[in-house]
Amino acid sequence: EAVKKVTLFKSSFPARFGGRLSSVIDVRTNDGDMQKYHGTLSIGLLTSKINLEGPIVKGKTSFNISARRSYLDLIAKPFMPDDEEYSYYFYDINAKINHKFSDRSRIYLSVYNGKDHFAANYDGDTDSKDGSTMNWGNTIVSARWNYIQQPSVQQHNRLLQQLFIRRQLIQ
Image (cartoon, rainbow, N blue to C red; front, side):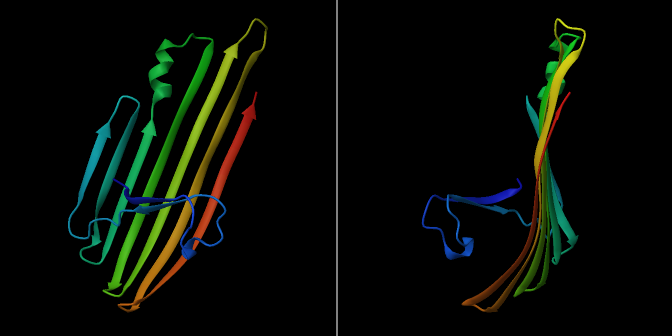
């Protein structure tokens, strides 16, 4: 529900992607409904997700927010021995605000946050407890202003901040 369109460029990228050296995946997210509120909830065997969208100011400003989490860690826990812990889960959140100044001018604010977590703790044949924990994820914040000067001339200004987090703890 968060993704509107995905395009894969294996080679011969358009100029807007700059001097990329490998494949490019162009992911476009939904802008949100400017007229009415609605959403979806999906509960699966290993993951669940929710999507909500609607107007903030009807006809001018909208939002779209999606979240997803796996719960393999919660499902496996009752089947694990008491002295061992293995867990893995991930989550991600997408949010977007879209404001329409006029038919020729719009601004977008997008945020993505995702994290993966893995932990393995167990008692061996020794007196000490062994294990490790790893976390990794991304946070991306972007702002984009689109302005149509004439039907054949469009201006796209983009500000992007990206943070990749990888943390590993070995106990």
